[in-house]
Image (cartoon, rainbow, N blue to C red; front, side, top):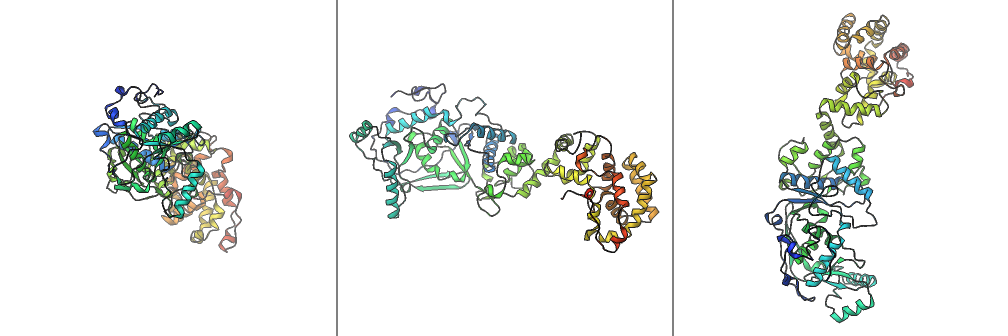
Length: 572
């Protein structure tokens, strides 16, 4: 039978068997089974990875949407396993769902994987000896192997209509039997088959499943997994429109790409039975399987959109770092056996082992992900962190420039309050704001108000008007701290009784980052060309203007104090 041949080693196998690698060569006599061959009991287990050959793993996403965090973790585990074993990480695009697959989705998946740092050794955009790497470009190969199975008797043509198949399911349901194919065409004569072919009746290729026995694999994560074959029924490998079915494509692809280990989500575990039978029928060596647990929401249901962001692209847009995402995803079901939770990608490659992957479901905790991202953000070199945050402040329309001494000092002061790059907007705007009236009216400020805050305010205003404060601030933090000490002595205050009133009166808040640096930065922010006019910055001059207008008598009597529009803050 004639076969289409393409310029790839695997597509040349059928027409020229001598070109096939050793693990794909077969004796032709072993393929010539009767179409009504009877099967013996089957028992098999996955072999130790391509007969001791090189480690080759694959990540095979469907380009029908964005890269889910579960898929990203599967890709990560494959990447780490390959790198830790000195093997190859292959990217294959499973785009046989022609209605839902798009090149836009494929591009988004590739972008997300690249952003995470999971560079593939073979796949789209990277040359390799086992291509093509899109299933839609491998149809000729699937048809060739389907014909092999037909010749050997492992599959047969099924001419059942959709109506007949629906009726079979209904009858099985009434009899409380599994909804498996009854095998109507499994024992058809050559004459019966030829008659349907002459009429042009559409047909599928069905795999002939043994009626007895069991199939066993040794899963690297789950241990021994066994299925009884009598629960399966003959299944379709090629549709009537000539398109291959998922389980057939995957098996042919993994075998012809010499994949040694199949690491994938546990939802694919039931597919392993069909795939293992196809491996056996085509005499392909079985890879080793490892089925990773699902990622669960806090309510222990499967993580979905109703729980919030679920795609890598969403987290990237929210300001997460790839280092934080990779670290957190690795810990969803894996650990190195210590209490350490901070890992770079290089650390993970060094420490990863599939034996330490847990088979229990992993809970996705967005709070911990934020914390983890903050750890990696603050671990960045100062120059990189400052550049990242400075550019964010400029793009967010807060600062006029993304670099300079103000940016350097602000990042150093505020970085402990930043877990996401986008958090930097909030902490800087909070520093620049002056919610004095709201703070004074709060119950938490009552002790400070009652501690003669109005007297400190009067002395502070006098020092500002005399030029003491502007002069000290202009000289920098050392001069400012020296002035504060002298100011405290003049009021006979020190410690909290000095610093709390100063914080409230100068920042408008009860809490915040280190006060001396904060005050100096607020002073610097008033210089031309630092903060954009629309950012809501309250300068030192404006702060003292607001401070002069406080009705301390009304405040001490517990009367309400009007909240000025300039006193807005950014909630934390």
